[in-house]
Image (cartoon, rainbow, N blue to C red; front, side):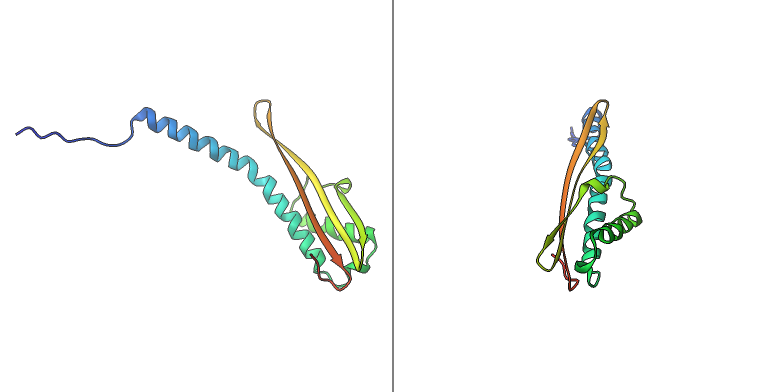
Length: 128
C-alpha cells in the first residue's frame, strides 16, 4: 500500500518573508505610537482645560500657563508656545493647537505628522 501524505504549510523562505513584512509594520507602529500618544495628550489637556470652571474669563497668559502645565504632566515635548493660538469668541476663548512632529524612520527617511486640535473655552466651563 502506497500512502502519500500531503504536506501543507509554509516554507522557510515564505516564513522569513512574512516575518520581515510583519516586522517592518511593527517597526513603523513603534515609531508612530509616541506621535499619536502626544496628540491624545494635547486633546486631553484641552478637554481638561475646558472643564475648568470660569476658564472663559481668564487672561490668555493664565490659560496658556494652565495648558502647558497639563502638557508637562503628559510629557509632551513637541508643542511649543508658538503652536498655540487663542482667539476671542462669544462667551470665552477658542484655543487652537497646530504643530508638526518629525521622526526619523530609516536612514534619511522621516515620518512627518501634522496635528491640529481646537477647543472652545467657554465662561461657564463647558467646551466644544
